[in-house]
Length: 113
Length: 114
Image 1: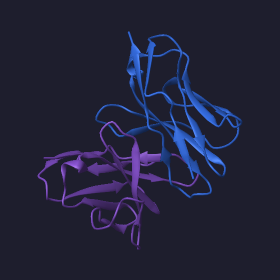
Image 2 (image 1 turned 120 degrees about the vertical axis):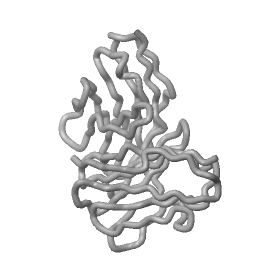
Image 3 (image 1 turned 45 degrees about the horizontal axis):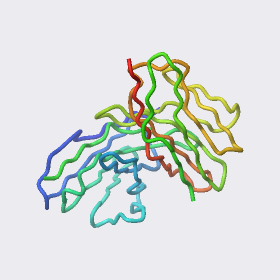
């Protein structure tokens, strides 16, 4: 298993500002994943964060809007930049190991006003 | 491409009755299938998985699921529902042809009525 600590757990932000979400894992992992869960919706993968290289973004997500850092094998950050109310969502950090289930942080509930 | 369908947005069941939450999937390779539950203001919690072997898998909190390759289904079941089972349930698939990416279904909200 893996224990994932994510913070902040929630925040209310002004439009036009940026928020950085932190994700800490209790063991080393090769890949970390960032998901977005819009209100009443399922999870959508934003990007895969690899240590030592740039993140890989899914269609519809760009680095300028969602810059990601991965300084080591246990930590990653996701920044939501120049926020608008449409960015109000739950953002989830996840890790998984080959052939096993994904483990999730408790999520960051973001409200943009 | 991978995809997951959960045909019911909402499932209502009386406490003590059996419950089924449906899931069908589409993959090009061998599927790895998962069920997760999400309680309000919480992250996703793993319930069970099918990787290989027996088609009937048992998981946490008395839940089980049956893998049916011919019908490409992986329905979640529980013989006797509890009010505390009320939550949002997600089916997910990983296609071994696509690395470690998970694709999640749209979710089914389960309400267990006392």
